[in-house]
Each structure stands twice: as C-alpha cells, then as structure tokens.
Image 1 (cartoon, rainbow, N blue to C red):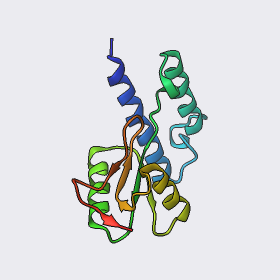
Image 2: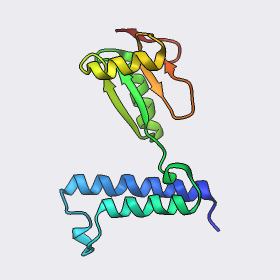
Image 3: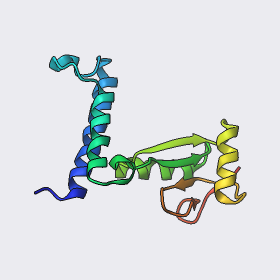
Image 4: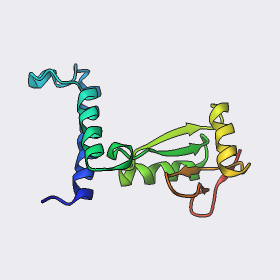
Length: 135
C-alpha cells in the first residue's frame, strides 16, 4: 500500500504535469491521447479522492502567497527558493497591485517590508532570511 503523503504528492505532480502540457502545446486537454476528459474533470476527480480519504480541502493544499516588489533582491531570492523547492505559489507585486498591497498590510499588521510569504497554518514570514525591502 502506498503511504498517503506519497500518494498526495504524486497527485500534485500529476496536476502540474497536466497543466504544463496543456499550456505548452495549446491542446484541448488530452486531445493527443484520444481521451475526452478535460483537466477540470481530472482535478475534480482528485478532489473527490481527497474527500473520500477525509482530507480537508479535497487534498489540494492552498498555494503559498508571495508578496513582492520588482527590483527587490530579497523578493527575487524568495521566489527562486520557492521555485527550486517546487512549491505552488501565487505572486503579487505590491507596487503594481494596490489590492494586494492592502491585503499584505492586513496580513502583517501594517508591516511594509517585502517579501512576505503566507503559508496556510503558519504565521506570515516577513522578509527573506532576516532582510527585506521597504515599500
């Protein structure tokens, strides 16, 4: 029997691969394989599996939120680290997106230092390895 964390990790890798190939070749999902199932259906089935296993959120972890500023070397370092580790994340440039800037201030209690990394179930990480840029 495959351990549960290993199985969920494999599902996440599968999801990334499906999205990559769909974007890369501009395919109707699975058209090349002669299948009639789309990526939305595959992801729906993955969530159902997670629900059957009793996992919160259908086994699909919420992506990490990364608040950055262009030109900040610490923001670039945080982004590179998340990419290197294969972490799913959504990046918000707080200099260009006022809504993201306001949300960052709410999450950090008014702290205006980037980068800010928000992971589900953890306190916000302000700065990168003790350093950051003031915005």
